[in-house]
Amino acid sequence: MSEKKTKFTLADLFKRCQTQKIDTSKSSCGCGSETNCSTNADSQNSCECKSNNHGLDENDVASNTLLNKPMNRRTAIASMIGGTVAGTAVASTGLSLLSTEEKREKTLLKWQEYFKGNFQVMTDKEKAETIHRLERLAKIEKNVDVKIKGTQAQPNTLYGYAFNISKCKGYRNCVDACIKENNLDRKSNMQYIRIFEMENGKMDLESGNAEYYHEVPADGHFYMGTQCFQCANPPCVEVCPVGATWQEPDGIVVVDYDWCIGCRYCEAACPYWARRFNWNTPEVPAKEVNKNQHYLGNREKKKGCVEKCTFCIQRTREGRLPACAEACPTGARVFGNLLDPNSEIRYVLEHKKVFRLKEDLGCEPKFWYFMD
Amino acid sequence: MTILFWILAFCQGCKQKTAESTVTAPSKTLEFDSLELNQLKTEKRVLVKGFESNHRNEFFASERESEITQFPCSSCHDSVLKKSYGIDTEKRSMHVDINLKHAKNSVMHCDTCHNFNDMDTLTLINKKPVSINEGYRMCAQCHFQQANDWAGGAHGKRLAGWQGKRVIMNCTECHNPHAPAIKSRWPMRYPSIPRK
Image (cartoon, rainbow over all chains, first blue to last red; front, side, top):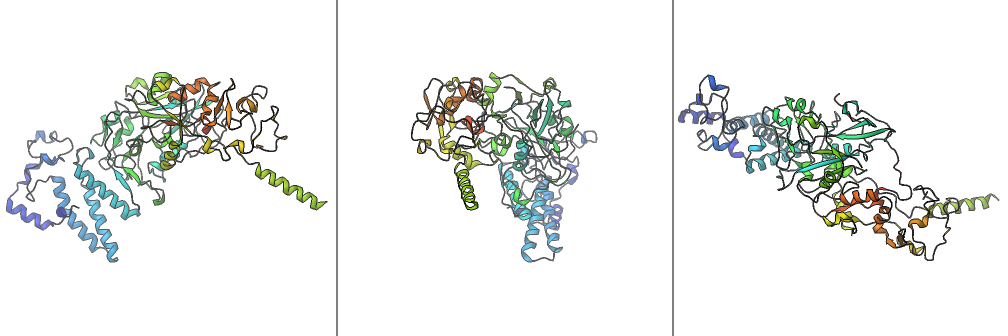
């Protein structure tokens, strides 16, 4: 795929550098872009790049002609050391030819993955490349043929969710479906959905019990499910220091798991406790991996990144229902397009008494609760 | 004497076997990734009529007759049934699994819903016959509020997806018409420890 980039060795590049006399001090600000930043000591920290993602945009960096073609710092380093790393991996293995070949490929793919950019600024070609790499890595590491998609948002869609608190009986079928659909970590028992058992007549979420485990429904209680509400005004996106999380045109707040640095600001900012942090490398048995994946959705995550409910982006963008709504045995979950006046969600909003959680915070969640 | 006892016991066993449910129990929980199943279900559908929501968009309910294992009922019930046909489980030779717990027996009897003149259909309170596929019309007679919500989308469950033809589950797919009360059971998953 990108063999071209990795063919060059370190020595080759140094040689070229010397002959072309590239002044490396120019890009000392660390943003990778030379055209838009001054080299003053004062402005080093406040360097402004045209592309908001650390000079990843290839159009920005046409002046670096290391290999006689436009290249930015990220790709330059990736190609410089990529070949060396792959070479060392081969040298250090005393295995059979086939496994050596695979190990070499894996190392190379991982290296290229490490230097890829933010999904928001990737070109279509780069997106296809990284998706291919991830699929290949899953095949090598787990022997699973996953299909990762990068489906764009459908035009004229804004997803909304409604939850019937008089119907939910606390069976947690939704939780089970969510875990299976989204390849959630089995080791730490990660769950996006939390069902609160609430005393009748009390609306305070703080007094709800999400740890219940007994025969349900319990007398004198009702059940209230929470997950990511895909706020229209999401505080988690505001606080992210690296732009690893954003709102898509169809209203879904997504995370680029590979761009996330794991600072957990978003987890602290979310008033609904919707975000989850991977304290360990997520473990999903190869047999149970859901192969229908999306780059911004249920693909396999890594240690130290934040993840969250995406309304099952891999399903909903194909016109299907989220796994939780499909699995609900009581029909308490209603999902649909808010912009379609004939949708079920619009019927609920127009005909039932609805409320939202912590509405006074102004996050504008797109998740409503209603009663019969 | 012993032999006679054994023969009797054997016959009893046969009787129990044949008395298996001819009316399907509420369908099991859908598998979460049941794309094919859902598509199959949405192909068997009936157009729903007579609701205000139809002005917004036409929609369908899933078919029920094909789900009943021994349909048509007239293959056994070929004659007009007696009005007093047993409500007591002990006196019944068939349908022993049906235990009517819908309303008081003085209010509801088998023939409140079943058409004794034609067992393949149901009967409305005004004695008009209704096909089993249109079972929602039976329920709507009393549960009109729920039926309106069902037609609009606030009650019940949509099949397949949020896009495309709207096919929703028929009432009896979730609710057992003979004993509609929902039973309690254990949750499917143990909770992960939440943040306080």
